Image 1 (cartoon, rainbow, N blue to C red):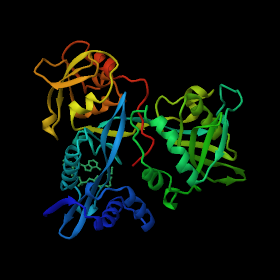
Image 2 (cartoon, rainbow, N blue to C red; image 1 turned 90 degrees about the horizontal axis):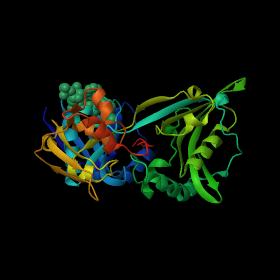
Image 3 (tube, helix red, strand yellow; image 1 turned 90 degrees about the vertical axis):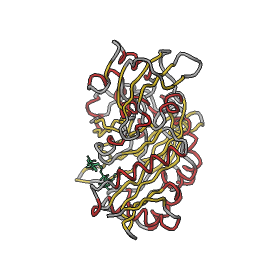
Image 4 (cartoon, rainbow, N blue to C red; image 1 turned 60 degrees about the vertical axis):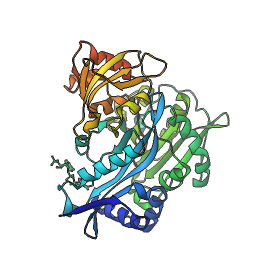
Length: 406
Ligand SMILES: CC(C)(COP(=O)(O)OP(=O)(O)OC[C@H]1O[C@@H](n2cnc3c(N)ncnc32)[C@H](O)[C@@H]1OP(=O)(O)O)[C@@H](O)C(=O)NCCC(=O)NCCS
């Protein structure tokens, strides 16, 4: 089998999308394809061909990703699929190599993705870089510890108004939240706000609510309701995204959501681990919290990636990094956070610790600590106390999270 791999021509993008969703056992109608094409970059959509048959797909979005204290260009790996007729013959491995080469050529120091199954991408050097809380809360048991009256005014808005108001709120959250990325106007219009039937999964339309405090738009919620009646109302409220620019705004938008009538259960799929909800209610177990992985991140350029973020201490640490998929990253790296800006360079000094490129990705946004990696046998200490020094360097005040699957 001779498989060719190359970027798509513009007139092949429709086929690219059809092939990708076929790999997921689904289909995509023309309207959805048109929307996807508005945000897809043909040059970054790579297809695998068996003769004249497209059999595999993978693409990169061009993102700017918030990291602790800064931001970094990132390749947003997406639309990865190989047809069932062509699996386990190395096509994904070649696609991933091509996608990461594309990112390196564009000077993107990291690649990020959402994994359908978390065991797929570790072999390519990705680490679990954000974690998220899912809740499935019994609404009648959500008793707020703070019973003060609601603050602000919630208003339902149209898609057109949402396009004008929500980006300003999101941008204020995004700029200080590791794991989030800059959303363009096109992204909002064609990716975040559209409400096609295939997104509903048995629920109703997407509602958009903005919360204004003292006349300023400070929070918003996107949600759907899945109606269910069994003599009494037992509907499910599915929160798609609810963000506030301040702690108070975040608390108030959640109080608004919990006050929607006829709802038995409130479900949200992706909240940051430092979300205030568990500390706001009298019975945290009733929130039905589960924690799962979010973004997976692959460091492609250690020097550029590590120097783009800030650090929690002024230490100097030498790490031995293993990287079998892209061996050029492997070796000893010195991270010196003692100067005005961090310096990262190769060095020959004896290492303080050793870890894989995956685990450097898991540390990068602060989702995991050095001592956690050490406890799991993934960070090896060569000098005593190195794991705790990694903790102090990489910790950050905000939990990394990504509010959207792309
Ligand atoms: C996941 C998928 C893209 C893999 O494509 P593929 O061409 O079969 O992958 P490869 O042949 O390059 O596999 C490379 C390695 O990953 C392993 N692997 C591939 N898919 C895997 C999976 N779903 N779970 C566990 N391991 C997997 C292979 O066994 C192989 O291991 P090896 O190198 O030790 O032999 C393909 O199965 C698919 O399209 N699945 C459905 C859609 C999907 O889940 N896409 C990913 C979206 S995030």
